[in-house]
Each structure stands twice: as structure tokens, then as C-alpha cells.
Image (cartoon, rainbow, N blue to C red; front, side):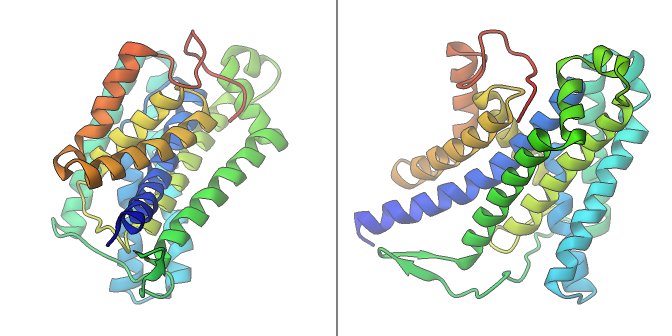
Length: 298
């Protein structure tokens, strides 16, 4: 493959990875804005999205289209159950550090459940459309890549419309600014927090279900995906949804080109190196203000 083909190939790979990191980072941002919590179990929503869809598609033999929406619904339910069981009551009195430790514990708990149900083997899914690659500029790009990019773009657009154009979205944004003031004007903060976990889980499931056909899914993929998504959220400015999305794509591109032109040994280290640099140079992130805080809109 010539240089042009390599660049296009790495670009496609980077955008694919970036779209997953963007959705995970956006999930971090939604929960952070509503609660102030860094949900370190965010990567497990991606894992559940991939493995639950494997169960319905491969094990039960349901159509791919139907399995996709059932997976989104079930993972969203897991996110809501997670909030009600582990976050709802402790969040009223426990400090943020305790809640952070709870999210770590839940992450381990979810991985244990997944290992018990699916074992340690990696799983794949049929492609959403043809598995035959499309040749563009000498690079072979799978049609699934366009599904991932399209679904990611659709999710970001819908989230933007929800937070900026709907009453419920504006209520969630109000909770992000000041939860006490929001409750004083009649907003049910508890329901908004529950909704934030539901939306975050839906985004994770969308990422997991769409990436599994080209990147195998297994029970312990969550922590690394959570790390990459967290890096995107911090890089974009923690609490700024658009920043998390842009930073997710940027992180994916940097990782892809670093792996392609330097060494694959740096693949997993890239996100950590970028995170450390950002925390040293501009802790508020690329798009964040001097004082890192919550903002009204995504």
C-alpha cells in the first residue's frame, strides 16, 4: 500500500476509534454534569452493549435490527438500575470520593457478572451490512466503519437537540449549573440524575453494539474504553460535551497515526501520555475555561 493509501487507512481507523471514544466521553460528561461524579463504570456499558447484542443475535438468532434496539433498551435499564441501587441514596450524604470508589466497585462487579455469563472468550457480531471492504484511494475500508461514524454522528446530534431544544434537556442543564436552585424552581433533580445514567448507558450500548462486528468484545474491555473516554472528556474540558466529542475524535486519530507510523507498542499508552500532558499544561482541557466547572449545554 502506498503512502496515500496508508494515510486514508489510518484516517478511517482513527475516526472509527474516535467515534467510540467520543460517545464514551460524552457519557462521562452527561453524568458529571448532573451529579459531579466521574463514573468509572462507563466502559462497562460499552461492554454490555456488545455482549448483550451477541447473545440476542448469535445465541437466540434474532434479527440484527431487532437485537440492536433490544440491546439499547436493556443496557439503558442496567444504567438506571445502577443509579437506583448504588448511587441514589449514597449521593445524598456521601462525599464525592466515596461515590467514585462506588463506581470502581460497580465496574468490577459488572465485569464479574459478564465473565460468569459469557466467559473469557472474545465475541464478534455479523456486520450491519456487507462485510466486503470498499476501496478508497488504495485503502480498504469496511462498510461497518460508516455505520459506526453515522450512528455516532446521529447520537451526538440527538443529544445536542435534546439538551438545547427540549424542556427535559434544559432541566438537566439547570441541574448541571446549580442543583439546589433547580430543585427550588420545581425540577425533580433525582429524576434528572436517573435520566443522566440512562442516557449515558444508551450511548455506551450504541458504541459497544456498533464496534463489536470489527473489534471483538469481551468481558474485560470496559476499563480501557473507560480510560480512553475519560481522557477525551478531560482533554475536551470536563463538563463540556462538545469538547468531549471533538477530543474523542482527536484522540482516536492520534492513536491511529502513532500506531501506524511509529509503533503499535504506543497504542494503549497514547491516551495516558496525552492525559498527563493536558493535566500539566492546561488542566481545564482544550475547550474548558480556566476554572473547570459544569456548563449549561452540551
